[in-house]
Image (tube, rainbow, N blue to C red; front, side, top):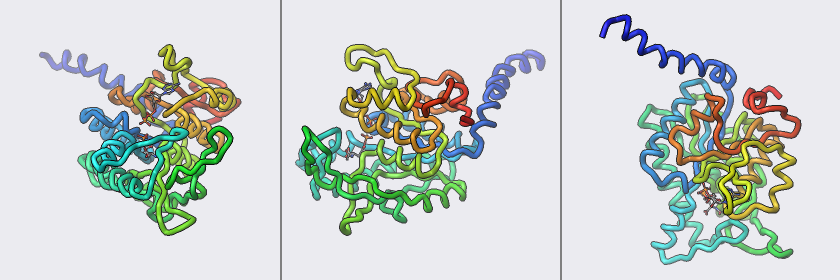
Amino acid sequence: MTNATRKHTALPKAEILIEALPWLTRHHGRTVVIKFGGNAMVDEELKAAFAQDVVFLRHAGLKPVVVHGGGPQISAALDRHGLVSEFRAGLRVTTPEAMDVVRMVLAGQVQRELVGLLNQHGPLAVGLTGEDAHTITATRHRPVIDGEAVDIGRVGEITAIDTGAIEALLEDGRIPVISSIARSQDDGHVYNVNADTAAAALAAALGAETLMVLTDVEGLYEDWPNSDEVISRLTASQLEKLLPELSSGMVPKMEGCLHAVRNGVTTARVIDGRVQHSILLEIFTDEGIGTMVVPDGTTDRRHATQGES
Ligand SMILES: Nc1ncnc2c1ncn2[C@@H]1O[C@H](COP(=O)(O)OP(=O)(O)O)[C@@H](O)[C@H]1O
Ligand SMILES: CC(=O)N[C@@H](CCC(=O)OP(=O)(O)O)C(=O)O
């Protein structure tokens, strides 16, 4: 190969880098909260690609904050302990014994694994739970089912967020990795919080530009489970109308997206965590995949990604 040919074949790589320039400029210094769902976390290669993407964002000048789930991992551990998993209103009924398992799995297993994967790229990730430095405070959540408030055990409803510890870590160039466990404002114990809800509350409190929820479907399906037509863009009001029709895992995700865009976050996106490097596609290209929720009055997709509404 001559020198001239070598230069020529390298050109597309340079073009790809240059294409990312407007996005790099746009997102520089912005906070992005990324929720990694337990269902998207089952494949080793995907987990490694997720870690690469998050580290890439950090080196590209963004401030990524990771909030992780672990529903399937908790269910498996409860099963091993001979405890049953029951969900009501999309939330795990959490007895005090189950709470010990939830905490052990989220903080001791899933979070540690993600921190380890991220830190293969340098001394970047620091794991914490909502208990640390009062990051997430909650009270007992009693969901209303068929018109009645029901007791589902140690499930928390977030009452306060203290972003101090996360902001100090971001300031220090670290990547916070947060487990969705809250300190209790009622007693000395802790609460189990849905990870989508925790991610949305943190995104709003941090004034994040983007909330990105990675899951195991392409996005919000218009007519699930009958069709796989994905809704690509929704305003807050459109989503609000749709919420009563949604079921299971999508409820906390879409409620979280609505909360985020109603509280200062520029875009909230539900994307397919099964697609390798979906985070990079979403942030650095126009080929956004999945479902994007924007505040009312946002005119178009490009405008929304600019964060200049
Ligand atoms: N309208 C919908 N569009 C897409 N998925 C839906 C919808 N309604 C319910 N679901 C279900 O929600 C699931 C995602 O939520 P969940 O299982 O809690 O994932 P995660 O572990 O990523 O938080 C999907 O796998 C799908 O089974
Ligand atoms: C109260 C409640 O339901 N908490 C969730 C917390 C983990 C979670 O949300 O994990 P995913 O994101 O993988 O679903 C649970 O116990 O499963």
